[in-house]
Length: 263
Length: 335
Image 1 (tube, helix red, strand yellow):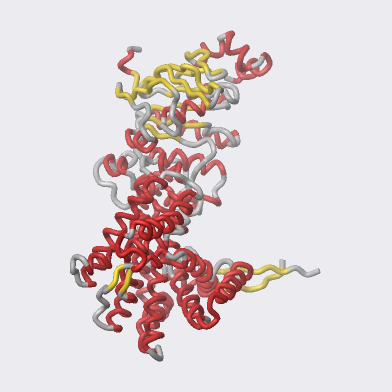
Image 2 (spheres, one colour):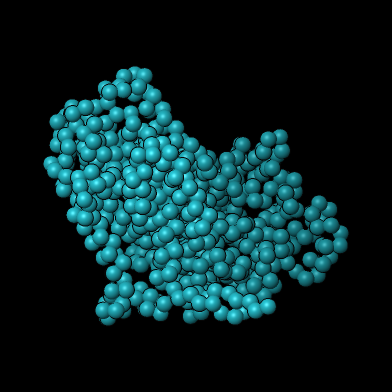
């Protein structure tokens, strides 16, 4: 693909925590409308990439280009306002509020007012109603009162969806999903996968950080592998799985067999 | 052994009276409005019920503390910032109003609103540097400013130095004074109660719950904190501005820490997060403090005891307890 199709270009970003290099000169492109998976062992810098791109931590050096514009060093809320949203690995709902009220907050943001929220164009209308609509779309059963329950009483599966819903309320161009599958049961993941695919059909670019390789390889168009803060390789799921370096550094000899058989 | 537990049930009437239904029956209408009416009428009657002008003055002071306590409650329970800034707000508002009155010759009813808005702006500006931070910084900074400003005024002999600003105009008469402050308490009490349930109020509560998620939603938390701090400091500055016109004097004692501490005590006693409890707390604490005046500084000991008793036995506060009893049935059931 040509370079101008890259919606997000990460250019040699480095992040040092004291003397430890969490990210060492990592570069990659994200193409418009694709699902890019980022995998790697624990501590390989996956979440740090998300934090750097979304401005939650300041990178030591390097640049991030969004539609060719340099966005590195901008504060987190400005970056979210441009349409790059993220979910948190440890879910961060507003626990004291009911689920649908959780969405009133992103719908109140300047970006949602401009874009009209998810799918909307123009007028936003009543934020409570829009919030419930988004929740229903994302798998909250409207008639079972789940949207009206306090977020603190919701199970993990719903909280993960709520994280996604919060991103969607902003009508984002890119969603960075930080381990949306982790902590979910197989059946919950099975219902999440079509959701991610629908986001792609809606034209949203998705970057997924995952440990659940089997499920990730099913949805991802491309996969990037990280190890010790460096990019090991990138390519289609099949290419990545065939890569000797990846096998050595990440999978370990037994696990890869298993993944290959199932995927 | 037989075990029992307390079961709590919402009163059916409450569930139904949340919406339009309330308009359909007197019973439900009064269920909703009676507590509010009792409060409003009670407060309006107070100036008449007081035996002499000394106690009428106490009512005004109670109301000023009530504004401070509301400001504390609003910041602490709806934004998550613990403010020790009562003295700071009182001082800034008080000095501003006094100076506008004596130097610029503005009458009290022009000086007070101006001092409120200007003071709130100044306070917000002073507090802006610590707004992006989380944790105890806000409390420490709000505690530091009144101490520092009092010393600056003393050392540099600003605004009359230790003598203070003399000859500040009073309110036209005691009735105007009392009903003005009572009206202000109503305005801010019902105003903030309404505000926290609007979408903007939800965002403020979200900042308290989870500021990272608010950032991730494309909103600047500093901006929303600044809005809330502006509202809270406006309440404090208004209180200070009224105070100088009641005492007809502005001095360093406006920065006294009483103004920071008593509102917190009142909020603990009255019930935090209700935006009514703090007002009730002031109506309990300030008169007690006046009754104990002859004990001198020993009244602080008594105060501490009352506070301690509330923290140990009713840490939720009067209002939270009362609301629960009003809205819910409680009964013991066998396990």
